[in-house]
Image (tube, rainbow, N blue to C red):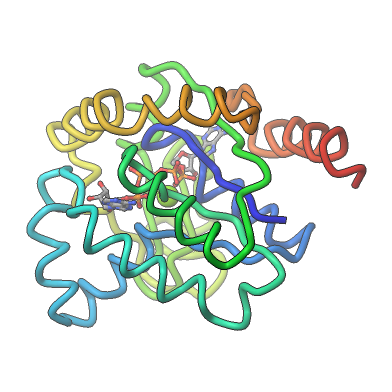
Length: 218
Ligand code: AP5
Ligand code: MG
């Protein structure tokens, strides 16, 4: 399966990708995670990416497209993948289609996660991530067992730099102007499936399962 998880910041792309990875053994490729790793490593890519990410702006298309092309060529993705956070602009979607076309492959389905804006802000403002293993929590919706510590590895929980209120608003604006047009792009190509992403994560996953059963007979 070659799938895209499309949705605004806070829609639950990362949360659902982790659940799907486990159930379907389909590896997640998150451009946000890749770029954050580069920032932590202090690489040239990381320094460049951080100058955009900390403001809630998109990293330039040509940079992200190169990153994703390099990933998709790796053998572990030969049998499929779940794209989380890519593509995010029309130019990225077109570059992806071109690159896959040349390799004789294509995206099969795009799951578009739908959540109200007010709920998105709540989800992002309350999100905490483990600094060590990147597990994602929420102060109200998925609180850790011990305050400030990761359930999985005991690492410290921190707030993402771009989860501050002003930056959240900027990210939501950028989503509307740059990424939301992809909904029509994929609808016109018959690949879009909309999934309501409110309710608890398992309920959302149940809806995704239904769509995948309908489309792939899983
Ligand atoms: P990225 O890391 O992709 O961030 P994003 O798209 O803003 O999305 P998030 O990761 O914030 O949200 P999510 O949908 O994964 O939600 P999550 O599951 O964590 O990108 C970050 C930055 O990198 C961009 O701003 C840009 O600068 C750069 N970048 C990345 N890709 C790029 C690209 N292709 N081109 C250019 N630049 C790029 O959930 C959120 C919270 O809600 C969590 O606390 C979670 O526990 C909670 N939650 C999840 N599901 C539910 C539920 N059903 N009910 C209640 N709470 C829930
Ligand atoms: Mg994410």
